[in-house]
Length: 314
Image: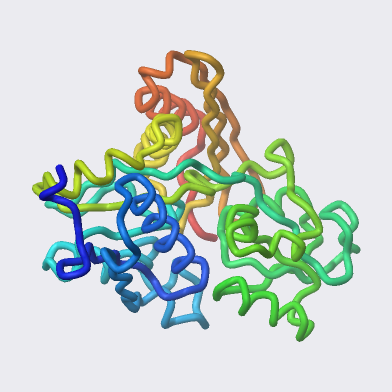
């Protein structure tokens, strides 16, 4: 294995988006590999790649192409050999990888919950009638509309820092972020508190970091196997199996969360009409070994209960 290890003269190139959170995630992957193989920092090179989703901030994701907006350019660089691995927030990842790429390494998952963020309001339930709430997430918008149809929802794109500035400027009185991102950036204090999953089921794979590689790169596969977290992988197998069957995209409000209880998997799911006028919920339990099948089964059940045109925009 030692002959295969990266070194300063031939560093392992790690591809990432350029936001503070994306860079934190790339540095964390580097730290894990350094620790696993006793490598120096300069055995790695962080390569920032601009993606379309970070360049167009004045439009909703559904209007400019959906989830691939945060991954396409990075995956192209990986396929072309410009980078050796790609680090992703798993909730941004399409369920199908391009031919030649594989996702089979996940770091230990962080807090899965949404964070309620507001300079003036203490909790979600304390939002005054007709309050303006900012969010770019279709899932969060639909969940909020279902529970509080009186709220006025406005588009809120950009990284954590950009969204905080919008709150300061009075564009909205509150927004939602992932607790995982705030924890990782040392900004937990920015949240009023987490929203429990019983109140708002999170996005599929929220809080998980994935590392993508070329499928024929055996050297990198061996490196990544040393830092892969098995329980996270099993949970994501269920959640991403569920999402793939639902054909989830940035145009479909979908929530889902898998938990491991001993040798059993518990998967909860929720699909919503885009306007939040209706939600269909369900859950499944089964053996951890059947994680992906449990996900597909729950998706099929929810789809069978959904009327025709459930995800259509009106």
